[in-house]
Length: 318
Image (cartoon, rainbow, N blue to C red; front, side, top):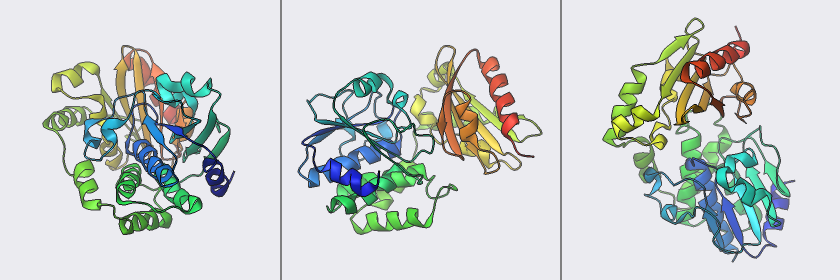
């Protein structure tokens, strides 16, 4: 479907619930709240839902504290944003898939499974880029609050405009959102220039134990639940950690292993460009982008490390 066709379908609904993916980041939250703003401009009420709590670092934006853990109203349509497959909705997966509601899927991941009745997937730096473009197709203005939400997603998922997925359109999108009233200084400060002391402690402990493999082409960090507790930190504070080992000279692929529960690890993968980490993640049922992907792997830490390093080695281009 084209974005215009998605817009035309959205105009026909009377109400919606907008679904974020589990362990939400700036892009899924920004896209959801941004889309909520566009629907509001169309006269369509909606609510934003997410199975996981919203990290406190996003509370500087209005609406983040109002994200519900499940739909509370009888919406006519369900809309998933920034979710490559239904499983990414976590505990709300069955709520979404088994419902007889009209289902939309708007995403920027190449690995998207094209679930839902109406699907729009385009590889961009962020789903918020797509939602910004959707405003033109809906023929509605973007107010300052909506612009802030969308710029949050664009800036965070692009690594503050530093990742290789950034294009001319990414900057044009950001410029448009600034014209609409987005406060880039507030977003920059809260997302990239401040952090709790607990995160600083966790960062230091984690980076002091970077492990290297395969001629130092692979860098790996791990964060266990015990370490989180000792630092007084939360799992969401590890967002962005993977960028540091990837920045080390000679490293081609970096991985972060975050223990989510005993014998279960959330894997984040990043590449400098010579290796497709989407293919690596897909081996374990995950996915994402060529340069940034993720998956879940079960087992003891060293078992998971061995599996992952072996798989990465098979995909590193010499």
